Length: 175
Image 1 (cartoon, rainbow, N blue to C red):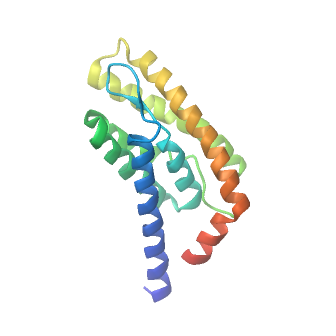
Image 2 (image 1 turned 90 degrees about the vertical axis):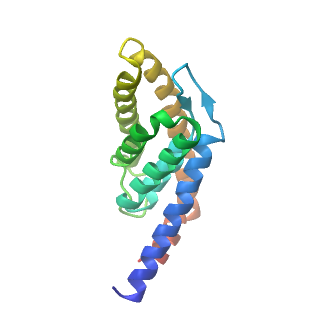
Image 3 (image 1 turned 30 degrees about the vertical axis):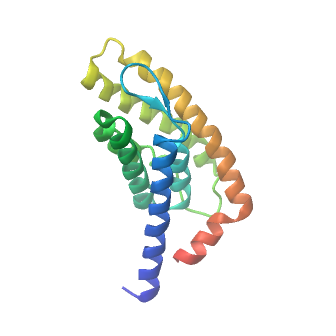
């Protein structure tokens, strides 16, 4: 591995680490709103995961989602941690970090697809943890608020990052 490649990987890992920390903060503490009796909560940590998904290569973005969401759940609602690690890795898949634009057609649709991945994953987890009678309605209502809010903040953040040339500057240092 050349020194340039090693430096690029270090920079990507550093950015992924910073975004993981932001995910923890925005999931566990900032706008953390408990919902229902199942230990679930609404947050905007997914916004940071979505931004990681459009800025970083997929494996790094998946790490941000899994570690950021998992650590936040260990701090606030540990029974959800395993499901969260899996689900937060999967919600990155609909996005693309290829190309210079953050707001591609694919990335505009990705938060909607991620909502269905998240809602389905948490429905299955809630059914396993608590039974199926109330799982659908309680999971759906929280997922709509969380995913909708995260999508709106993602669109705003991605537009701001794009106009500021954030991705161009990140790519300059990681290639």
